[in-house]
Image (cartoon, rainbow, N blue to C red; front, side):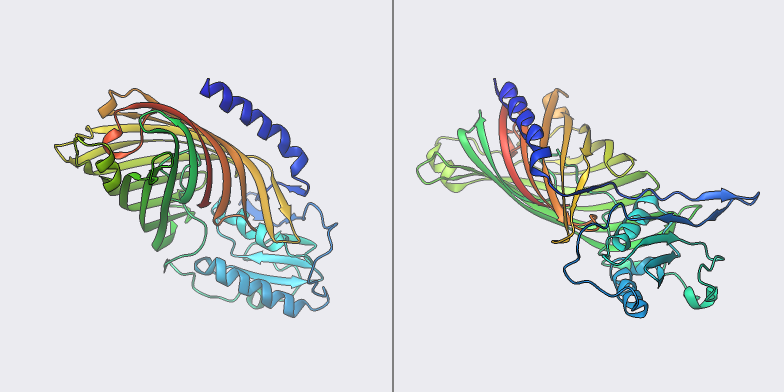
Amino acid sequence: MKKLVFLSLSLLVMKALPVTLQAHVIEPPEIIYAADKEDAKPSPKVIAPPTKTFTPLHPVEVADSSYLEGYLQSLLDTHYAEYDVVISVENGIASIYNIPPNESIAASVVMLIQDQPTIKSVVVMNDDIDPFGLGVEEVQPSRQAAQGEWFPEQIMLFPPFAADPRAITSSVSFRYLDDPFSRKTVAVSFGDRVPVYRWIGVGSDNEGAVQVSIEAGVWSLFDIEGDSEPLINSDYFIGIPVTYLCGNWSFRFRLYHISSHLGDEYILDNLPITLLNRSFEAVDAFVAYHFGPSIRVYCGLGYVLRGDSEADPGTGYAEYGAEVFLKRNRHPETRLYSGPFLGFHMRHLDENDYKLDQTYVVGMAWGRLPGKGRQLRVSLEYHDGFALEGQFATMRTDYINGRISYGY
């Protein structure tokens, strides 16, 4: 019955999307370099904005190229400082030099520039190509590219999974018919990832990037049908992920600790109750492949290094899934974009004899252009398998969940 309700609601949401999304539908740019001659040196490719029919709120005169060039360079220095990208602008044509070799990062650079109201087209240039006869030395200063950066603020190399119910993000959700607890519960999470240091130019083609981060979060569940709406359980998490992005592939290795605690009022309301200290440390390794900017598939394995004897978490787990972010709709007047997404996330835990634990999600996402930062998401989820909370992790459950989240 719950599956049928979820599918029915999902179809209604997807059917309503074309009506509610009235904006410029734009695909992220595909950075392709044509080869010429035997040395296969890339020649410039002009990437034109798909449409400029809107009227900018704060137009900048195209003739003032020096002002526009300085403004765009400051944007690049702010968002992509470690890549040392240089831009030249003349007559509304932006030429980008020293663009990052990674396709995903390069696409985000082009999107940032082509979305400016007075930019007619974007040209990705080689070091030895000078489109305006200004001299390569003047257009691209001979600056030594940085090899790394502390606390980078650019795109995340390995974003959390869209359908993972334990993604590191901040959210509030309403669950209906969560069997081990109550007909109506509210789940709240607070979490974030702090990038500490990023190395760029990693790999034989200098295309990869490696980052070390710290992430932490807490997931809490409340029974809103109880007399005092008691806290049922809270899970506390802290981890150190090392991520690597190269081309369409991305990887994550993570060491983490998690511990669970029952709420005091829930304990008093359910006496006598057996308290189990579910705490453990584990490592996991995941690999993901990106089919362009919109589709990602992934899988990974985890191994429990140490677990408390009171609530044995087993020895390991396997997870896999996929997510699709459909066509984005740009809203130039607000500098935002929106778009639907859907995905699924599967888990097999040793403590549950590797039985299937599954989550499906469909929803809408909003974020700031050029679209590589945090998002506000509103989604409908269906979970079928086992409870996610602490010592209840071996109990069967299935429920429908409406969620609002903010994060990567």
